[in-house]
Image 1 (spheres, rainbow, N blue to C red):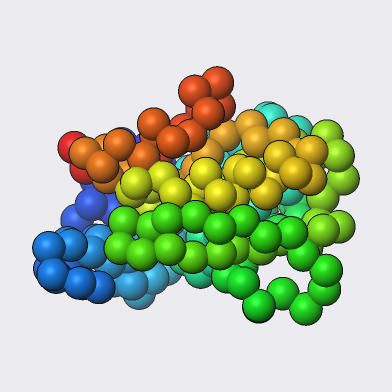
Image 2 (tube, helix red, strand yellow):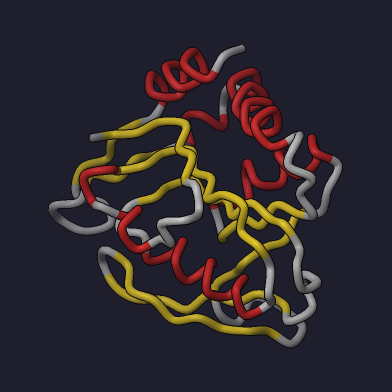
Amino acid sequence: MNIKTVSQQLESVVRDVPDFPKPGIVFKDITPVLKDHKLCNDIADTFATRYKHLNLDAVVGIESRGFLFGMLIANRLNIPFIPIRKAGKLPYNTLQEKYDLEYGNATIEIHEDALKPGSKVVLHDDLLATGGTARAGFKLLQRLEAQVVEFSFLIELEFLGGRNLLPPDTPVFSLLTYQ
């Protein structure tokens, strides 16, 4: 299946939820996607095909929706999946990074021993909006001395300019982009 076909199928299933989590925000809901196991497999296969020749050491996914496909991608590549979680959710020693969201602020963490220095990773999440979460994840990975080969998203809300917060020398791949 080609990227354009998967992108079109994804777009046909994503649901807009107006005024969530607060007035003025149109939330892109991927839960209908999760009901379609074939589409989920096609999405994971599309990402895995993109990354299979990069000799990655891990796929890093950001809580919580970044776990859904991040884990599938890692499994297809036969490499580890590394979670970045909200503060207080990881049981071992962690590194923390605070950041701003489009509707608040938050802190995320990664285990201090999650990756070896020089590890090549893809940083995956479901959505790139204002870029705060992805940037915070990138900063955590920098502190572990990992090399982020690419930022990976199901959906990008291009009109919010999230790419502007990400390092310009690191590619960004989004399966579906809303302009």
